Amino acid sequence: MTAQENPEIQPADGMSGAAPQPLDPWFLDLLACPSCPEHLSLTLNAAQDALHCGCGRYAFPIRDGIPILLTDEAELLDPIAEPGQLKKP
Ligand SMILES: [Zn+2]
Image (cartoon, rainbow, N blue to C red; front, side, top):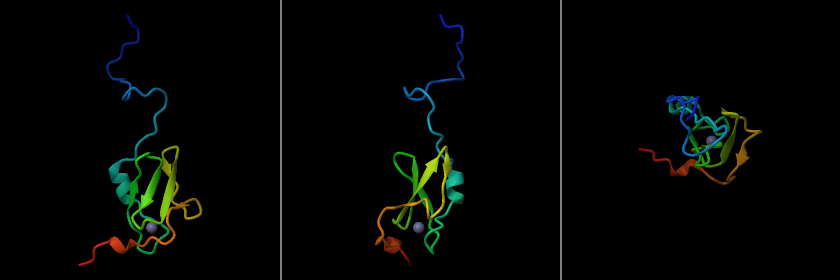
């Protein structure tokens, strides 16, 4: 018998403790890479702890659920990556 039974609180996939808050897709939509001239959109990585720019050069860390969109803080993934894969009509 549990005295604190509350149907509104459910454990998230067996994970205990504080889980990082995923970014809302609409919020992600507002963000753009500050480091490349194209200001490409950003995508969440698999670990959900960084945002990768569409240019392929930068990964921006997410700290406490807040994306740090600063070139100084960005991890350089591939300095020679170019957004050349972008299809242009
Ligand atoms: Zn970029």
